[in-house]
Image (cartoon, rainbow, N blue to C red; front, side, top):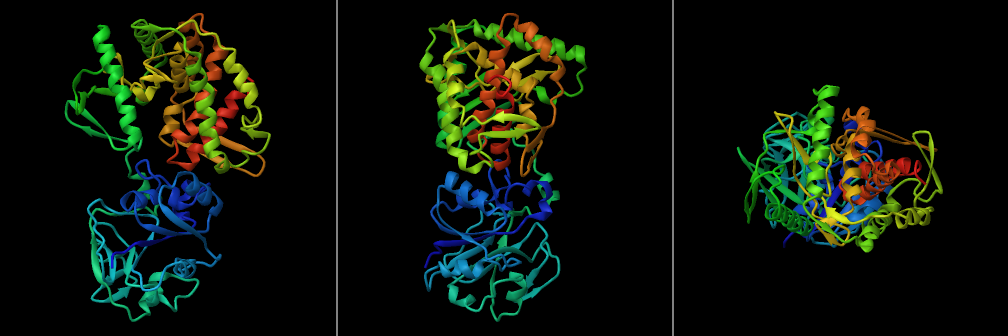
Length: 499
């Protein structure tokens, strides 16, 4: 009989992950742009999950309700200690005489790992260390890289665990039972229970709906979800339009559209250029502004105020409404963020809508749509190059409000979005207020010069759009609970200056 059910032990506090589990359970810590638990969902999308929760149970409950796209039941652990806690309650929800998989939430299974259809198996580490080992049919509390007990067990039925206690250590209890297992080698799987292991991960520069294949001189970009396919189509249309309607050179050369392969720019993302002095930054910023002004002259269109409302208000509120139940204090009229008493947009949405309605936009221009420092490369000659265009604005393809581009650039200069996107921020959700600090791109000192370069641009409008962009990030950054909350609080913080 094929294994249809998976029990996930997700109730631990994850204290060894330190600050990463301050506001959320361990199973929601993102690994390669996906929460640990969701890697399991992705590998086995058609299984039925029984998830044991405890620490930050309410956060896990709301997060799963909002984002999980699998069949699942969530069990609240009875408050007992150890990896045994909650398993007895989870077993109660299983049908009799049914095989099931039991696994820990911090175990990321390799793509190649196949779960046997029948039998009794124990996952054995082959390239990472575990505290217990299973060798020659015996459990021993001895670290092992080759026979380590990796936190994955396949049982023929729940009757095998009929006498399981409510607390204690699961593997230690198994040691005392007369159960024999076949070994299941777990090459290329990985356990992320330690902060030291987490820190070995490379920062992810693309969202979970894209895959980048980096070659020596080119990059292939493949969409891996439906959302990725939609985004890719708009990006391709943007590159084609620019190539066919201008001699604009500040973009990568496109080698093919199917697959989408482009020139690899040999340089650095602008937020990585921390060695530039103030004078060099001024030169680079002027080059960026001149580059965008040149781009904006390639094409124009009549203003579509339906797209303005969609981009600045409707989309923002739709995203916020999706995560409202996830965010602490979201039902309070005021939220104090970094000692600033901020009006909560859920209660002042009419004021925001009126601000958006009052915007006067002469015409639409060709936009990049996402011109943050993350989407620009700087060559060794200090020349900026645009990458990863958005290709749409509201309902409009290619064309939109020019100030949206300027607000996106401000998002990096003043808002330090790029560091936030790399999870380089600290969020403290306290009983009466929020404290959030974001690492700096170290360009804030050029804010005044930025507005000088823009000349007659409305500074208050740029700051309003900046706040809206933060609020809109909430659901876009769905893979990390702290990012959802942090984007919301920063949005309120900047919005308070304008309302």
